[in-house]
Image (cartoon, rainbow, N blue to C red; front, top):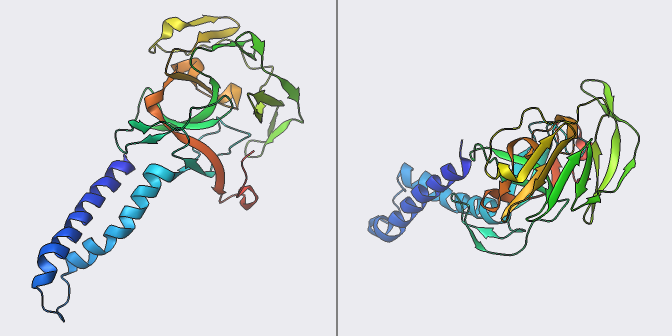
Length: 262
């Protein structure tokens, strides 16, 4: 369901009713006459819909985390906020950038339209920028020939399924974050699909090595062994970017997560 399109249609309809009533119908009604029900509801909701549309399209948009691919940073059921202008102002619906403000940086947690189905929003961490050579070999991440710094943390307990994963602190650019990586999971990528610029990637028994094409990004989940990401379906083009995630604003199962984003 394209909520942005639905909201836009509601904005047009309510705005048309408001304009019609303000310019033509209201001046002709008697001063003490009651507004017709369709004017009362249609025109009355217009300011509310307008505010929501502007906020959601250009300022901040809420999302719910549907899967465990970003554990331990984001858990299933987290409600997050996404900054819509960090990477530039985009026209709603068509998502075309009209004002360039900034570019994604390594380590950013970014929401984007899934390249295989742009009607779906995905969330992963930015690992590779345009021109980067990203290697994921034997479960170790290297960018432009330099291993990404990692340090061991206490094992992470998956509370729902009651098992432990090896947990590490990783530094991508200026961003330090936690990630999971288990020794017993395979290194090779066994389900890679044919995607645009597939020729930029080399798959082997140790994993994958890719050169990120211009205007694209290489995205990986923090739950490395349980994330279907750029290692499988390829690069994210700039026109698919939605925004930068920055805050957990609610979680029904754990109120202690509200206000955090680590």
